[in-house]
Amino acid sequence: SSRHRPMERGADMEELRRFVRVAGPAGVTYTVLPSGTSRQAALKNLSAGGLCLTMDKPLAAGTQLQIAVSLPGRGEPVNAIGETLWSQETQMISSSGRRTSVDVGVRFAEIAPQDQEALAEFVFLTLHTV
Image (cartoon, rainbow, N blue to C red; front, side):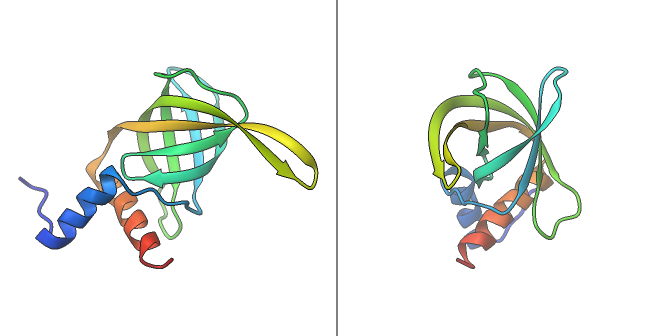
């Protein structure tokens, strides 16, 4: 295989890909495919296998999205094709009153190995600096 990693760190990275989610200071732009409009969403949490976005309206499960995640310290955004798995309404209470938003869970369906590695690295580094 062309994807060699040091054994110990590689095992850690595999665990992170599957289970660990971090809240991240990252910007997310998504487009509903095939030909939707690009929109911004707030990133609630992120793993190397998917993410949770906070947005104004729910998306049906199975909706295909083109996603661009801007990570701190990385010039190019991480690009992926994602599929929505679930949407859940949430109430946010702030000084301006109560607001309803929707958390949407997205699984990465297509992502380049180097982009998935960048996400795993971001998750790994975030965990070790908290």
